[in-house]
Image (tube, rainbow, N blue to C red; front, side):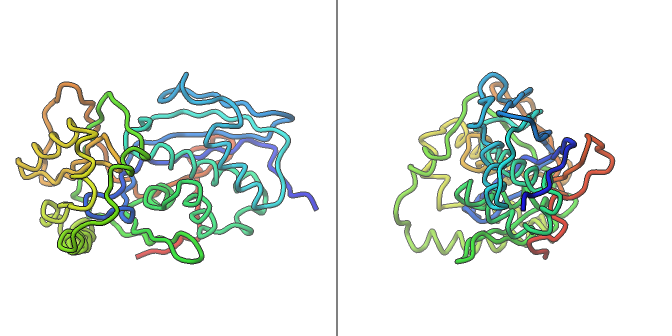
Length: 315
């Protein structure tokens, strides 16, 4: 039996994310109030992708586009492929800057494909979306907050990726410093050693646990809780400007970290702190996105629904 596909366009809005948050390597992530919006509709034949905003002129306009590849993965899971697809991408998340642009594309694709199938939500639940998105990305720390919003703690078990969502304290204000140069996750991961000293691993375990408490309950611990010895120091030579900025902000007592694999820098501010203009950096004052991926039909943004009505887990 052929699956029933919607004849009307479906739109998804997905947030930027910052992963690791210092000590929470490959586990912690935060959704940010900067969004990509993607509209998809079933077409008669072939694939077209129109991109405006970030990545316009650089990202592919055919089957190789990451949103399309993620959509194809879900259609395969559901057992059939539409003949053609037409996509419009309005991108606001900087590409290759450590703000989850690839995770946003993947989450947009998996949620769009499920929404285009009339019984897609019954056949693929939130666990399935997270599992598929993490398989495509390679790790769940960015796709989890993109899908669920807020702060997430993600891990991988035998059945695939899993995550819990926790509510950040309202007083936390993220600032992201975005440099002109780009970074590649593969390069950042290649800089990591195969082993680390036991003392460093122990420090990170304690800081990561404290960070969950600091972000959700008591932000006064944010500075200490964002200390890291597992990855940022090893990656510093490949992004010296970012490492210097983190060091300078932390000298001021600001809870600053490399955002994801970099080279952007995330500062978690409280108490009205705001940065001064910084030459060579675009400073984005943001909020925590509390809702994650939202899906709507016919561009009726006032009636957008959460992409995952059955959350993976909530804390």
